[in-house]
Length: 369
Ligand SMILES: Nc1ncnc2c1ncn2[C@@H]1O[C@H](COP(=O)(O)OP(=O)(O)O)[C@@H](O)[C@H]1O
Ligand SMILES: N[C@@H](CCC(=O)OP(=O)(O)O)C(=O)O
Image (cartoon, rainbow, N blue to C red; front, side, top):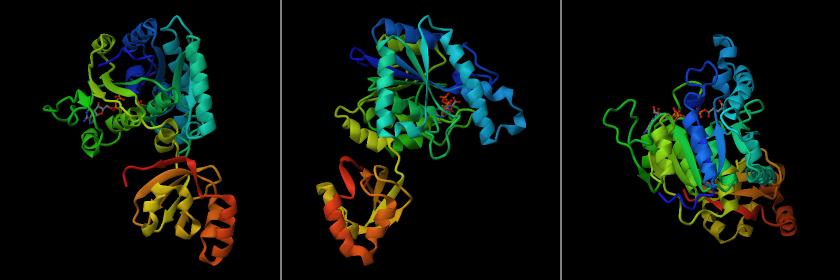
């Protein structure tokens, strides 16, 4: 494991580590993680901490029967966030900073750049950013939903060299080690495909956490395509961190792509959320790779969702294959109007003046065609 080029890393810590019995936060398992962070900083490696645990920390404040209510769950998070931050802050003799984000922040290009600038400022002044999802304001449309994927988006925004995801198992196994005694640890993954996802299974089963091994693989896929080495390690054992500091891999190492995606293409592919989609004629799809100006309203069969100029949309082929994600230069309302066959004369003149439907500067052609 080549750790020599690490200048900045992101460490993700799940609920089970910071609120192990869901009766508030405990630093019991955090001491070795805090020591790892301190020793990284002493070696000149900047660290961003992504910490779950606010919901788990706040859970005991609310009656058991109310905990399924989403508004109560958000209140739990708000109440627990203070305790989560305080639990971490008292372990360090340097300042920490609360960074609360939603997916709405990360998928907005202007805010994404602003987040990067703030993280750079904090890190350059020796402050430890402690990132969590801003559960108080999230909705189904605005949230990332799990801190595994959030940590990968933060690692991309921070342009980190490595992402270390702390789990309650040693890493990714070929099947769930809690259900199969013969499960074998994968110490190295150089290609994340359906076979890897099949090993990870479904969503988390522990209640207050929201990740699971699948979201960790999703996070790894996002990070490695940005050129970020990703590790899943056992956060409960000090040995994991000692081995990491010695340049050894204690868990599962997902190899960073040698040729990472261009930054804006990665953002469009893995962070930006499509607010709607256009369905195009099957016969058309090939020239999409030859230039976006060839996509005109005459090729559009359907416009789905409501979106504005500048929003990200999905370009889907008639047979359902996702072709690209791109910034739309037209609103859904206008596209519906010009895609209507009765308006073709107006449409061609309008498009001639206004320009291509999707932006050539902000497009990610999707590989899973
Ligand atoms: N193939 C697998 N390898 C490792 N863990 C797996 C696998 N499939 C499912 N799991 C489950 O995923 C859990 C780890 O994810 P999660 O529940 O989010 O906990 P944490 O966030 O604390 O790591 C493991 O405890 C295990 O029960
Ligand atoms: N914002 C939430 C994150 C929940 C979450 O992702 O939990 P986990 O799967 O344990 O990392 C919280 O602080 O509880």
